[in-house]
Image 1 (cartoon, rainbow, N blue to C red):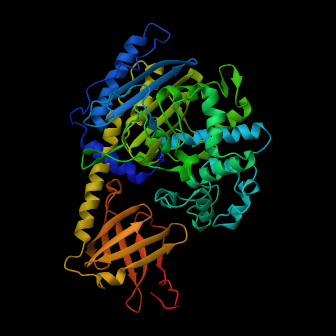
Image 2: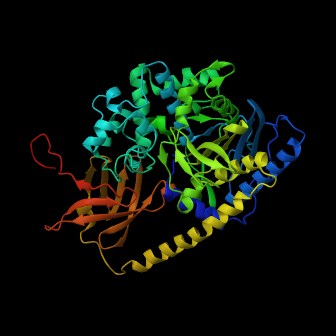
Length: 533
């Protein structure tokens, strides 16, 4: 989610693909005016917005983005709301300020806001244990199980790496996902390291649902959407059926734009399931810049709103990922639902989002009473990260930086490194080998306590793998390793390796897309007569 649902893998894959096409032709030249900019304060607005339009066009060209919607809030007013490009590549479906996109992990701040409201009501405490609200909640480490607080869960300092495939493959509901958290071994010491964690946001969302005796979805609708007038927003893709002005998700495959289905992530909803448009999201930004007050009504107390903007977890700004997370920053941290950094001598507050085919950004300079929302229909694109600092520059610098150029330059060595890694992998492949066993011998159900079942089937000498909602064919690589050609091509071709035991039988399956998992071959089920099948 992500980033956004911050995932180095998709950042690298999509970013490097975009870098190779930096000089590609502009895919969509039509700029929508149906969400025309409103006049802001000051005589320089026309020139400012002309620069912005040109910059957005350049951003779409640099990163091959089919459609973008953009809104700017200044001094508690929506001063700019506009759409660019198309909802679906190859079609005349103009994006405007009312076009709906998935906002991905920009949803996390909504979950933090619900908790803040529950704290205001005296029903929760930031520093109370999660297990106090969710009896039976447990983590792999006993100490973390006892000590994990709501603040910890919302601050990405649980000690856990992502474990995202547990929810991404589908098949597990919210309760089952939380039960399975106990099988995710920690990667770092508790509270020691920033580790982006969607499952912990599910825990926070379910905790507030428990104390309020209302689902996370219902609370988002009644406590946030309704008071803010966010009438086009929803918490599930199921609400988008039949709606006319909805952007189509896209991804890049070998520099070619392809469409992909909306991803249903209702099972991890508190971490990233909201769908909205920039007009609605501008109202959310007004609430944030108002420090919990909207249209004269205090929806969140100033104190508890301020808690969300306190730096809880330090973020090391190392390498391209760090620079993506905090463009132009010297220092960065995570509060609760928000990234915090310095920007041109000011505090910047922001959170991106990424889910299949969509990328988003909500960003603010609170002292300038300035906020920006960027929604796009391309998976893993740096476009939102390129646009929001440019908007900030337009209001705080004489000459804005060319963030597209900086990101393209940053990604160039990653592109080269990616090519070298692919070449090295091909070179290391041992030609002429054969699998240890005939295809049928690999068939079976391989289980991991966290991720569930991977089912391998054999037909006519060919192997197929099914992992939750994801399936694909196995192409022999070398020895007992296979490349998985997934039906969902957005995930590339991961590697699957079978472990063979001393008896010459497969005992375990490992997938490089879930490296922490150990899928062990389950014994065959017994039939009604007590004989193994």
